[in-house]
Length: 183
Image (cartoon, rainbow, N blue to C red):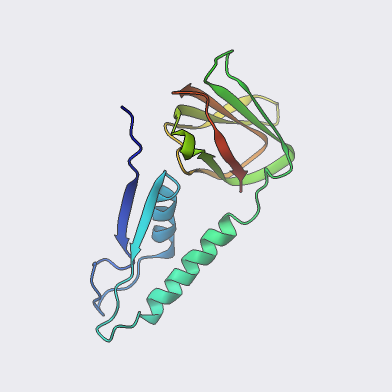
């Protein structure tokens, strides 16, 4: 049968797994991209921070960890979908597929869409399409994906729109989405 088996991304903050004073911490961009492609792709992110020979953490590594934490916090600070009209309807009359529409009320610049399923009821979504509406009220595909799971973060790259639509076109059962957020 189907079994949920979460995956894990292991990465060191430096090129090597162990501390070497000749190595520097990876760039903030690389660490954030790894975060988006791990935590934001239904997996966990295990970030190794090797101690120096004296048992302490390198000040530059600690600074980079703080920068990463601030970037994550600031990137996902204000949910632009909160308080907006969100409708969930059957997709093409299906018992298991859904269409979720988020009406923003005005054009907004969007960087990320975050979705999350209620994993206690199983990971159900198999395929989905994210669309945005242009100024002429025409829908365009922005992203096509497979699973959502515990968390899916979709990069929207500063997309400007007044509405977002998620078409869940293949699902094992009725999707149970417990988070929809736009940042």
